[in-house]
Image (cartoon, rainbow, N blue to C red):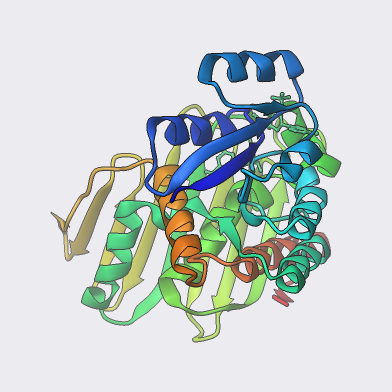
Length: 321
Ligand SMILES: NC(=O)c1ccc[n+]([C@@H]2O[C@H](COP(=O)([O-])OP(=O)(O)OC[C@H]3O[C@@H](n4cnc5c(N)ncnc54)[C@H](OP(=O)(O)O)[C@@H]3O)[C@@H](O)[C@H]2O)c1
């Protein structure tokens, strides 16, 4: 039997969730939606025959909703998560899990106490070319350091430049993808971070950042983040003693550098990660297996971002809590 999903947030990203669910994702059914704009919500309901709830609390009361997908600005994540856990609904929450570690801890604890599964949608983990990069890490010998980069256009929403709504700028919004990826690629925790942030066009939050982590093994990781460019780039590079692996996420290209040679070592077509996330979430619920990216994982990524902000403010390296 498919799991009834209640989708809260039908904006830029939520619309992608809706599309995949309407197109059909194994094990899932779009049971109800909620958004702020009631007219647009009613229009969606008429077009697709999916009930619309003007107030997300009404969506939580529906018995045909077994799992709640939170795709709203991060300022709403905590309140919806606590209420949904209280209502006994499973949770899939978009990154960043929360604006702060304090909020994220409360959310993880609420889900634990209620006994409801919580998955953090750290979607980058499910990118096929990055999965292949992880599989091939052993081919370049000991990894000395990683270099990760995400550059994107200026913020598409006003709320992304409002600290109370977004929680932070590029470090929290897009850096969180790479912070989680670093844990996924290495199975290690970052112990120290040094960060610098800047504002080029934004008013309240940073739109440019350089973050350097040190892992438990001593290996380093440089992360460059920005929202100032035309076009997009998302790249993950592993620099090893026997070669270098370079993954370009957009085109799904994975190359290995040996001497001056650059060899394609398994480029793989991209696949929408939301579809994979939904499929994986539904399967874990059905099989009652642990979530592939837990609330704790989401919390740890937020903790890395928070430590980076602390370092940027203090101007010194700080421990990642
Ligand atoms: N994993 C990824 O790669 C990825 C990519 C993009 C975004 N995201 C994350 O997804 C989240 C949403 O981003 P977005 O770009 O979709 O933002 P967005 O376009 O601004 O959409 C936010 C949605 O939340 C709804 N909303 C706001 N307040 C609400 C309320 N009180 N009740 C019900 N719905 C409410 C809005 O409703 P109205 O539209 O009706 O106003 C809108 O549909 C963010 O956390 C972002 O970080 C993740």
